[in-house]
Image 1: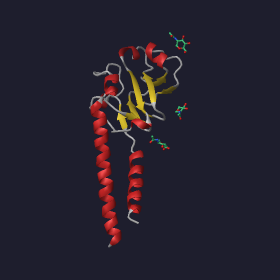
Image 2 (image 1 turned 180 degrees about the horizontal axis):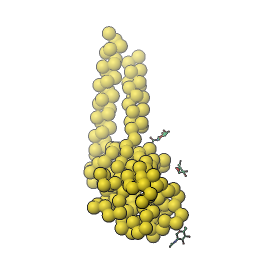
Image 3 (image 1 turned 90 degrees about the horizontal axis):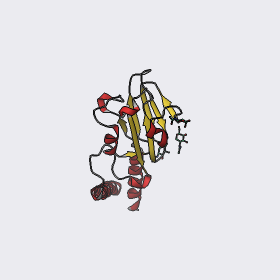
Image 4 (image 1 turned 120 degrees about the vertical axis):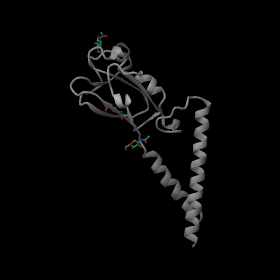
Length: 169
Ligand SMILES: *[C@@H]1O[C@H](CO)[C@@H](O)[C@H](O)[C@H]1NC(C)=O
Ligand SMILES: *[C@@H]1O[C@H](CO)[C@@H](O)[C@H](O)[C@H]1NC(C)=O
Ligand SMILES: *[C@@H]1O[C@H](CO)[C@@H](O)[C@H](O)[C@H]1NC(C)=O
């Protein structure tokens, strides 16, 4: 009998965790621009991207664009045959798989001026923390991952015990 609340709470927490996608604003307040003060890839390296997270690209509609391209096209700034192309000025791109995604500007020479971005989306098994995390990769991130698990477990047990008491009364 006492195990029922624990299972219920576990299911509820699981649903909340998988439903939380994060929207990243590319370039912060400056948006998607030709000469950004920080390389977009330096920004991307500091963040952890997961499946179903989204990128928001803000730029002048009609004057710039977001192209999703191949690795090869990314390297050579080749804008002639993108996989996907957006020109609306307020583009929300959702990651529908793990692995690398390549973005370049379609405006003349912008890509050569580093208006380009590589995002590597983490696999399901790498889900540890979420959102913009300035933590360096390495042993410390797995340490924080297990800390998070412990906090989750602690919270689940606490809530389950409270529920159990409430049911007994
Ligand atoms: C992403 O969203 C889809 C549809 O909403 C869902 O089926 C899938 O489980 C989600 N994937 C992750 C990793 O959260
Ligand atoms: C750009 O890509 C297209 C399609 O893949 C290819 O035909 C073309 O030769 C490429 N242009 C350059 C300059 O590499
Ligand atoms: C992700 O979306 C792209 C374009 O919308 C589509 O071509 C691709 O098949 C999708 N991949 C998966 C794994 O759903």
